[in-house]
Image 1 (cartoon, rainbow, N blue to C red):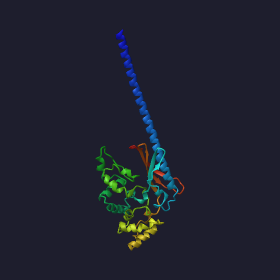
Image 2: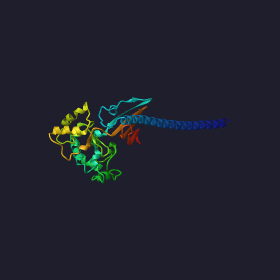
Image 3: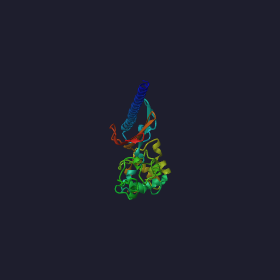
Image 4: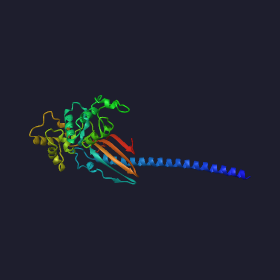
Length: 307
């Protein structure tokens, strides 16, 4: 009788252990499901934060007519100030990409002035001498002359070259180092190839690159009136340049490259929620006063997963 009781007790213990193990599995699956649901809800919330900042940026750009764009505009003032939301925060910047050197100008082999200006700009920022050739090889349509560098990648690539949309596309290019990208970032951007340079927002060294014979310091002096009174026309500035040079600009000088307004902007926002982060960068083109700007491209990164 005692043996039977022991057998029953052992069976009961085995059953209890099995039920306990099953309960642990069920609870683990429930916890995993809860965590997935929480992560999904958190990702959705971060996306909503980024949507809110993007909508605000679109509104600020839309309500400006763009005839004259300068650092005193409302869109330019909304920079880097974090907004505390229900459980997190979001902060970002609106950048006038037409205040930077447009690398897509280099995609046009006939734009000798842009290529010469790019060479001068690279010298001014201390870039390596061969960087211009490597960037042009990436942007000029056709098969790049340095195709061997792409073939040497693992896996090898057969690159398609031509104009680009955004600067992050320069990542992973085998002929460009991290330092190359670091020196380009403060002075260069990517916009449509027919974009002009905004004299009210461009740094003196970027503008000076188009005017050989004038130093960055001289250009800063010529641009200084915009600090209190933004230029109302590109032609007024070019007249000031001719006065400083003591001579007219060459007849073939591209006076149409310069303006005092912009239509292309880049918005970058970062949202934070309970230790998680998401970042969005958006390329925006203004279409007219009171009209919703056009989104040219959008990239969102959530916890190292890009969408």
